[in-house]
Amino acid sequence: MELRDASGLWGRGTRETERLIKRELGDEKHISVACIGTAGEALLPGASVKADRNHGAGKGSPGAIMGSKLLKAVAVRGTGKVPLAKPEALVNTAVEWEGNVLLKDVSKSVLNQAPAVSLKDGGISNTYGVRLGKRFRVAGKNMTDPEWGDGFATRFVEACARWRIVPQPSYNCKIGCAYDVHIGDGQFAGMVVSTCGGGEQHEGAAAMIGVTEADAGLILVDLYDDIGVEAGTFGSIIAMAFEAYNRGYLTKSDTDGLDLTWGNWQAAMDLIDKMIKHDGFGGKLAAGLKAAPALLGREKGLADEFNRITLHVKGAGINIHDWRPFWSAIFGFVVAGTGPSHQGWGMDWIPEPQLGYSNVMPGVVDTQEEALKKVDPVRQTQFAKLFGDSLGVCMFVTLGVKDSLRLSSRALAQAVGWDDFTPHEALLCGERVTNLMRLVYARRGFNKSDEFDVSHRYLEPASAGPSKGKTIAPYLPAMVDEYYRQMGWDIETGLPLPETLQRLDITEEFAY
Ligand code: SF4
Image 1 (cartoon, rainbow, N blue to C red):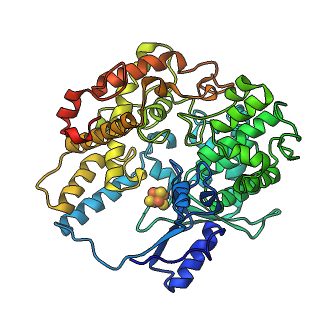
Image 2 (image 1 turned 135 degrees about the vertical axis):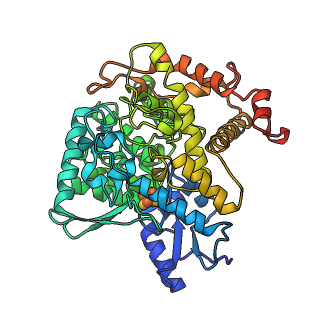
Image 3 (image 1 turned 45 degrees about the horizontal axis):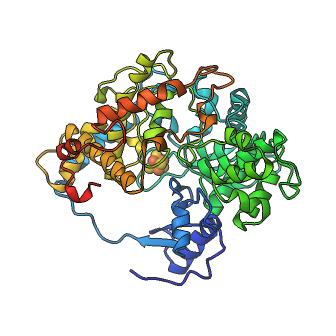
């Protein structure tokens, strides 16, 4: 291991940083680079760590953590081998698992089968939004206009059908959800945009501020990835500012002259530049997804108004889609131990027979009794996801994939040389992680009211679509209590009971 001076890279974007490091080390093929861009250097909320151009991690603003330590990049060259206890058996399991990952069930709609199927080879470029069915909604204009979101998705898919899409899989990945778009016409013809595989970055950067043109939206995505920022948090801050401007809460005199009319992507770029420099209005937004609207609301005497147009869970941005037609996903964001992220999504969109649920549930329901039925599936998927995360595998090789729990458990046993390791033990592993996260919460002063730190925008009924006129809000307190009960947590504090920790073999030194 070697530490190198990064002063020559400071101030550069993620793409340039990666290119220069690979050139300096003289080994483009075998080196992977994880780095931050100017957003991480500026400690901006949502700052991400980008890896090998099309990939990265953004939840929890890890780029800001690296920036605070003046750590610009980590470059690795793998030269060793991973010792495996039973390599042949493991390969057989991997082959079976891989076959299941891309198994198509023609009897089901695209939305109800493993996402790997529709994401294969940059597949989001042709399935995004409308082709996933009317239940899926794009978070258009700060989640105020689902109908507009349909058009956004349609324009994107139609444009991508004209342009060249080149999959950019992670190492050894057969899905390849990440891709490059070679823009073939219009004002950005000839540009290549490298992006990850889901729609969140595109939606958070462009749909949330009402950008109409598909190519301009992609250029914004490229900027987000180059400065190194994820769109859930960062895009929601900018979208809040756009909505405030369009509602007249802010004027040009507040925005340093920027015209934040919906769709003005050039103004968004100028605003991003100001945020990186902590300059004027940009500096105020850089305070964060909760702090910025609170500050602006105080200054303008419009605290309630700003509060109502902010989209967050516990102060962080969600994975940007309009999840209001899928209450299990909303609930999963609320109870996720990392702040809002895909941990437990329940059964509203993909069935998981291996977890005891062969059918999807209605995403939006009318009674508390029906709402409470969503709690156990969220827990089960949370345990399964956290086991997968502990293995270090991509969520798309487990989510909705036939027998993935059995196969991943077996693969672990074969890799390390255990006689067996059952799916039940795998779920227990996920349950332990869920509890350990709660113990971290406890050390950070969590109390139950923090569970309900969910923004108004997320809980208000949608103006169109399956959740029109309906909201999870009245059922949320009972769902949280039921979740605590099923978890073996104290209903009053939301923290694990001693007998729960004992059952999970979590020793006293970890307990609060
Ligand atoms: S590992 Fe997962 S996130 Fe990475 S390219 Fe493959 S499917 Fe996409």
